[in-house]
Image (tube, rainbow, N blue to C red; front, side, top):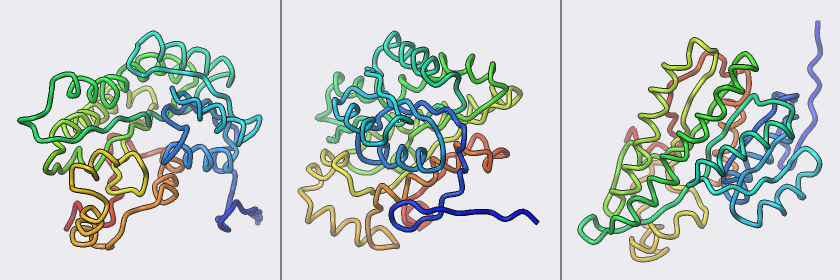
Length: 265
């Protein structure tokens, strides 16, 4: 009988090399949920390329050592995304997983929202996923298959006041994910989306400001989330590992909600 040997990462979580040898490119990973995903990937044995505009991406790569490499990218630019995918795969020696986590949030009443902000949300939250998939798919096909993980949001399934533009951009990600999954199923390429609810990160600052500040947001979370709290980034990141790993080999076209029970309440 084969004995499984475990080691541990900070927090005492068992590590079993679930991603040993996996080659991953992830956008928007200099901080918040993306950074926690990188932490999980490295702990589970993957090699990772971080694509980000933020100079913190350099520090993040340095923090995780030789298994992580940083490439500057502007996901609004097709040429920049193509460079990330091509140079990232060159550094990695191939590609198994593309994680599209880069995001942008603006909040505001629809009657006061401007077209420039609307277009900016769709450029980062939606169109960038098309660019990434377009250039990653040939590499994944060459590899014999793989996984694309797109970042959506609970807002893409259930909107709220001040969230019309953001919700629309994230809802587009879900539609793109399910259609692309059907297109690529025959290539053994799985495509799924992660839809977090409230997460305790500075990414949500625009929404919090629209709601009237932290106290108002805290009360909203307490009254609307069955678990009575926000998530931590470390409670979202394990789903990235699952979708990147062979454990999810029969899962595709899913928009997985992690929201403390909001969507079904």
